[in-house]
Image: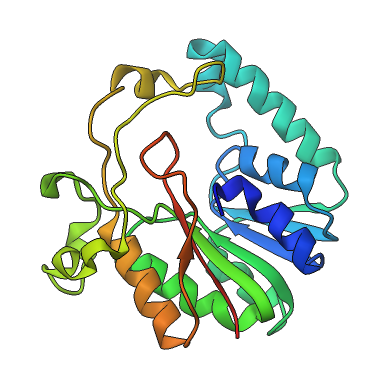
Length: 231
């Protein structure tokens, strides 16, 4: 896939139009995009923070982001296919039957231990032929820019990833699109890396005898995502 925004189109082509779950939705912008493209029946967003957690800060400092957030939250709340679960994902795992989900996307805590645990929780819920995926499948160009190092099972995991994992690249903005002030300020600097995320995803997918694939937006603005089909 060229970009993670192509997931809803892929699901449509594969006839995976039942239930999807996104773990870690922030203000819900990706959920909104997904629902505008995907033909599925129900989409569940899970996050321990409410969708409007950052609104007051945006209202004071980022008028453009504030306006878009208000529009996004209103869109989601009015969409009958959307359900928001305000808590950690483990709280809601039993709300879904085994092999009932067409798509699960993990974008919550970005370290080895949490990605491993989240995958193990949700893998049984994915139907055969369904897709599990996650964000930030990339490593830093500079070792000291790696995130979640304290959660690595082995201090040498980055060396073992070799050329299977792309670089996260540099911070930047897409011309004509909204850009957070923090990204404007750090434009051109090397991004933080997520070797722990990459290792956890590789390890889990290989253990389940599936094939890990990735999206192609690495090094531009957004980071690549990993994904696998449940055999």
